[in-house]
Length: 118
Image 1 (cartoon, rainbow, N blue to C red):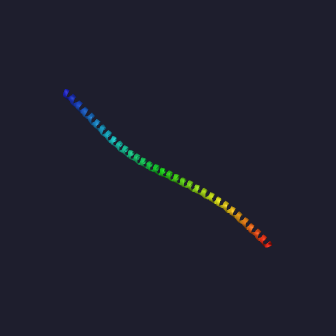
Image 2: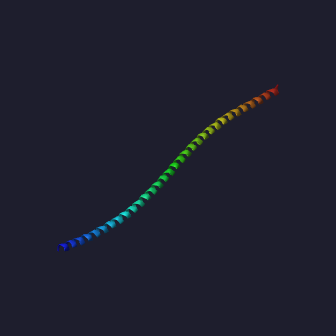
Image 3: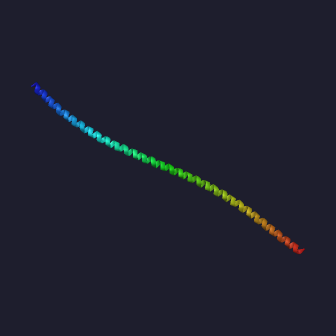
């Protein structure tokens, strides 16, 4: 009877051992599947991060280009203002010279009139 009882316990423990092995195999399989999924997710994260870094770099390049263009526009505006001032000064001088010319013409005309009278 003792041997029968021990054989029964061995069979019972063998069944439990097989169930535990099966459970362990299922857990290992599930863990491996989760690890593969995690690896894929990590790879996708790295790819998205790399893409974001590239977009950020492009954005910074665009900002630098806009800043450079703003500076060019500023310099062009300053050049335009200088040229406009030079034109204003030149016109003022031209007007002054025209007035002087008219005065000289008038003086010449007056002298010619006086010389004809003499």
